Amino acid sequence: MSSSIFMVASGDLRPSANQKCWPAQQAAEAALTQAIHQLGFKVERAHPVIPEKGHGFIDSQRYGLEIFQQIPSEAPVIVIEAVWQYSHHVLGGLIYHRGPILTAANWSGQWPGLVGMLNLNGGLTKAGVKYDTLWSEDFTDAYFLDRLKAWLNGGRVIHDSSHVKPLHASPVPDSAERVGRSVAEDFAKRKAILGVFDEGCMGMYNAIIPDELLHAIGFFKERMSQSALYAGMRKVPVELAQSVRSWLDARGMKFSTGSDSATELTDAQILEQCQMYIAALRIADNFGCDAIGIQYQQGLKDLTPASDLVEGLLNNVDRPPVTAEGNGRVLYEGQALPHFNEVDECAGVDALVTNRVWRQLGLAPETTLHDIRFGEEYDGQFVWVLEISGAAPPEHFVDGYKGATSERQPPMYFPLGGGTLKGISKPGEIVWSRVYVEDNKIKADMGRATVVELPKEEVERRWQITTPQWPMMNAVLHGVTRDQLMGRHKSNHIQVAYGDNAQSADEALMAKAVAFRELGLDVYLCGGATK
Figure 1 (cartoon, helix red, strand yellow):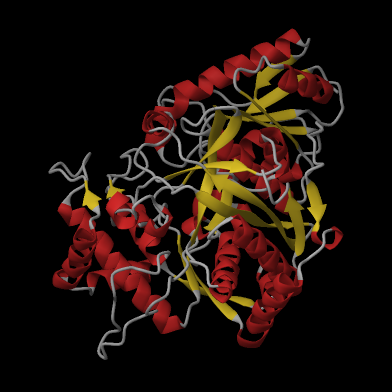
Figure 2 (cartoon, helix red, strand yellow):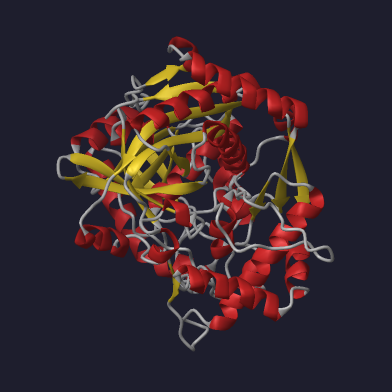
């Protein structure tokens, strides 16, 4: 390998986020550069810090393509991330690059680079680009340095994958086989429609499943515009929106409101979110959707408050009733309308299959995706911090709606505000999974985990080093270490759903695995059923 390493940093599309997060990126780059220098190699930053922008990120797809035109095609490239980033800013350049590629992130929940790196990894995997990946708290630990040294000297970065087994190598209980086959047969017979409100949120190429792959498993996309959602919101009377707010108030949910709309959550923002909730259900019903995904970030963020409160409510069975226009019919009565956050179609397939399997098993069907945000050792075990920007259902929280609060989304990401659906996930047994695309096939990794109860002080500390406005799940994965998950996972997202107990969660895991298999997915079991 050449002794000159080119370093690039993909950033957000929003200038406010890039400026706010730039100091953390600088610190990570400095630490990584020092590690590379100590190993005898030279680092060349492939693009400058631009003072008038206030940061040194690649902040658009066009800029990224231009930067990669200047990098020698066979040179080694490191994409270093300490922030959430839009993968399409660098994906095009990486697809055509012929030299070795390493993705790297700081081990921090702050902005967060781990989430950004995992998202990019998922995109590279889907695109068929060969890459290696690493992460570190301070870029001085042996796990990181040993593998970095191997990569710098022309080798590959190897992570332990002994926790992964294909489904066909594991025994499947007869009961799980029956349920899984039944669910898959129902999809084959009735087919499913995913309502997609604009694809490609935040450059997440890994979140788009090609239509022909979806069609082969009995799923179809109804492509809808977010402009239609906004138009639908404007048709919802304020009194109807207020009835949704009143329903939530009566359930005991709390809203942390103020009067300054630029920095605080206001009653007017909440009412707009309630209008979006009503409009989303009506549009989904009009098109016969089985699940929907709202993109929000680009487009809607400039028109209306955040969609996260809406998403969390849609994912809950017990939610404010909404009727169709004109006839008073309650929409999706007694059901969740699964929502795949950020239009992650992989999560949409996962959520809908989960919903059907869990209902057939008589389990609470609420499911959501989380970001793999962070994790640390606590009391002798590694406890992951799983967070999402507000789309978690109240059924997952301690005390349900009474344990839920809504806080204003951070202004640097959400200029027009809007509230989250925040809570701490209740202790219990869960199934986790991730659907992804690799080798032009839909695949799924699955496993078991336990949501643990941490002391209030520890929960608050974890919120303060991540995003305190967002719902949190503290989870211990069964039979999967930190580095095994990071080395294998193909997305920033992870899907979760509760069992009633360990036995029912084990059964649900296998039934869902069979359903995936019968639909045509390649299925892998990760870890074990017990801790």
